[in-house]
Length: 178
Image 1: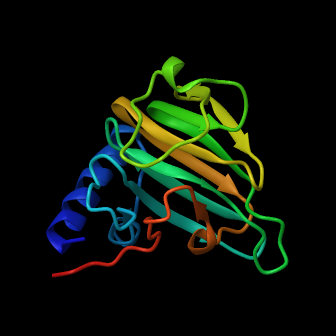
Image 2: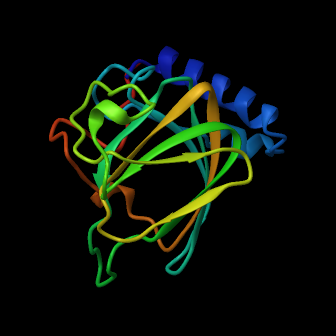
Image 3: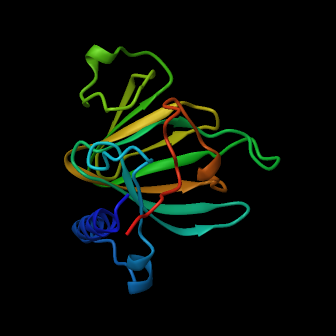
């Protein structure tokens, strides 16, 4: 990912945090990460996030999805003797279309199919103040609504680098080029 695109997405994410009335220190603003998943289509497949804390037991993050932007389908696998991450998403701003294992068909969802393969279509729509818990090993993907979304994530220890993705092309940790 080009540094200019990375900085553009980071600045835009900070605007979304402000819309959601989430106050960040300058250090936190500087630490906002842009995940473009190595696909070069960050405005369609990407995620902006800030990790507040990630200890052996708990993790807290703030995530931003731009309008129509999707986090690709993935699941949390056992890592370092732990069963995999359990996470609760709480919508703070906008609308989040979340898809998990369960009943549902692709033709019935309200989101747009992203530019990556997806196989689960059980739809959960989160609006501000609503939340949903995803258990270890559950396939899921999510997308920002028409106004984008800000999502708080509360979870057990996060090992994003070990997540498994349906799309084998995905590279979770960003590579930034000048």
